[in-house]
Length: 177
Ligand code: NI
Image (cartoon, rainbow, N blue to C red):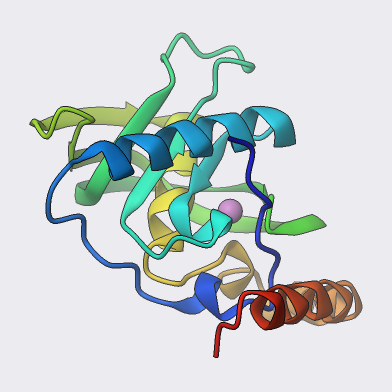
């Protein structure tokens, strides 16, 4: 099911999401919703808090880019190792039309649980590694705008203020305090 993407300003995006204790049908339904919502929004990654669910689940689908990596769902993902740094422009479906440069590891090793409840580990590099780091940050209530240079953040202020109203409205509609 396609779900509304929660906008910047919502408290859900600033919470530390809860670990998934057991991979059950609810979690698998959540993953399907994430994929449906990501496809509709035409993005490369989505974290559960972005559809209003404060649980540690993310998906990444960069098949629309030059990558050969298949779409992936990660439950309770952790970055075990990060190496190298590179700066590149990022955006976020929860902060539409706002972009900024963020420094990230170029190479990471990630541990997670898959949809069958099996733990696994893999390596990622470049853009794939960047998207994974961005999505995992969402699970700790961190957004890419937290990492942009202060001057750039200043320039974003007007746009952020507008989006923030949307996020606050969402909280009101869903009675999130
Ligand atoms: Ni994002």
